[in-house]
Image (cartoon, rainbow, N blue to C red):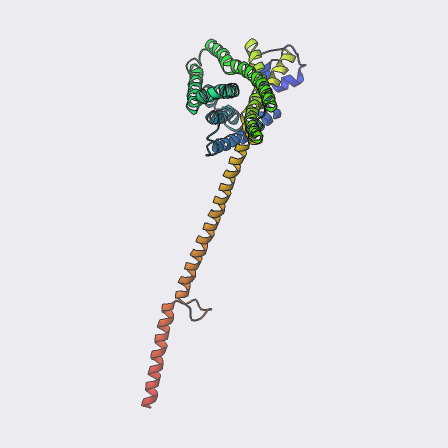
Length: 383
């Protein structure tokens, strides 16, 4: 690769510019440091905080009776793991020792596949959540059997095992470039292409069925209990809207990643100016949108799910009351310690406030003065 001085003095040839050259220059430049070194890390930290709060709220007693609670918890865990492990190479590249090539190679070989497996889990869990909700809307009686908590845990175990199996060959064939190319193709198909296509189909079906069901239920409301019917309809439609929004954001955020993956499979390093710029722009956009996709679920739950907001308010009130009681307890302990010190001081009163003598020294001085007085008195009597 040519140096920056040679690039600045010699005229640029658009036919010789490749995507690898542009990516390396952007990584070492200010724009790459801002996007990959600052913005991506800040978004990852904020998203991890939101997903941790989501896990805590979903484990509350009010949220345990939800339809897809276990699947949402698995989605939160995978959304924590995927961007965190994806940001570790950028942390070491911008803030760690660049001269240690063995450490950077170790991270690229053994840490990056974990992020790929977590992305596999996240995409297929979104597909499972959408399919479960579609079954609940279509067949509400059968959904109580098939969409149970036990089946949710089974599905999570199966998805986790499949993700582990999908990244295991990366550790065995990392020295074989031909095998790695085949593995990248298989991983792109299994973790990106298949769940994206299935998610699009399920999203369209669920959207059409929900619109049709809401229209028929509103037209055929019961005359005996119209308020109860309206409340049930609103609660079901809100949960379905929440899942539709999650699925929609997953489709939109995964689209640049899918296009980039297909282009990289066709040509890994495009060398003309326009394809190289397009490849680099898609790389920047896909990295940002992937982190947004893993971080936005907390905002979606807070805006669309009333039960989630209520559980979050209860948790915040408990934390505030716990902090308030802890402050009161600290103040009481400080006041009791102060009272004990005051009582100890009052037990040994000083004769003179300006004197700093010991009580034993004062007592001895008094005894000496009394003996002197008695001796003077006896001498006067003898005279």
